[in-house]
Image 1: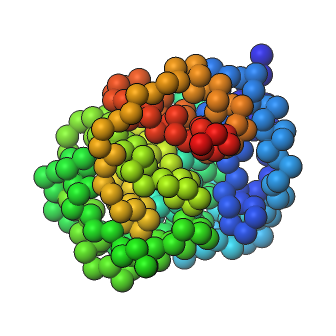
Image 2: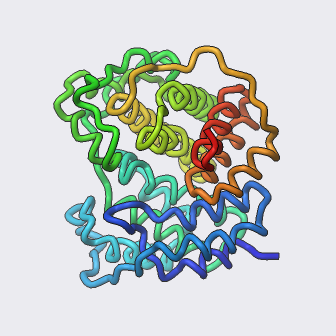
Image 3: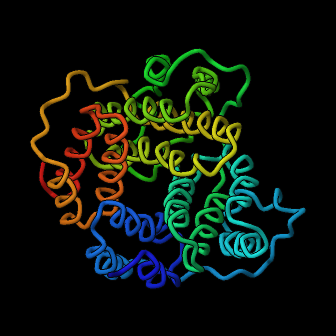
Length: 345
């Protein structure tokens, strides 16, 4: 029986980006396939996906432990950052490294359209099952990518808000349609938020002091609805997938983090989702949810058959969240995505 280590070893010589800044989804989607109960599909899928990837960047300028802030957000040093975390993980238990670095990286949770935290989350889930050299290195890859592409959005935590995400989303102002983009990259589309003064207050709308699991459920349910209301096509489908998978990745990290770190990460996870909505969206909710025709097994089969990395990861996240919070919006969003990304409208 194959394991995630087989897929990780197959992909170990590939870099975290390709195609002008697109994130390498190979390790993430392969791990999601194992979580979906499809280990048979993971390695064959990774073999095909690998063909589009670039070689792994070299580490040429080591990052000193007391000089890391100077390298934070420097995308030219992805290789250096991954090597840095390999050294950190060789010298301390991985949970200790995760707790040390998550508070430092959380303000940049939007990094590479949340791919840093997503890759870290998938790595942590596999490590929690079994600690192996390949899984430890994959955590270094996730943390290193998060650090190298670290990017802060306008606004910083001040006083706690009083709202749940489902209540707060209606207070987030979207950019005018003429300032939004339907093409290019997600990161480029977020640039307009720096000239939107109201967005800076979004991070302080929500209350993250309550039960963390319930907060994640409300957060992901809210953004599954945002996905259905705004994913008309093209870039917006991919964008609003990340408004769910990014915040949901914090759930994968949370069992291994100190409570105050979870609270901080959730503030920034909400901010990241709100940013994607503000920069690309127009409607804060989906309204009535149409009946879903696909079963859980159907959704998994469609996601696997699509071969699409986003369909696989989104189906896994939606089904995981639905198991904890059986709101129909998760299944409706997953069905929409697997049909759209699998070539069926």
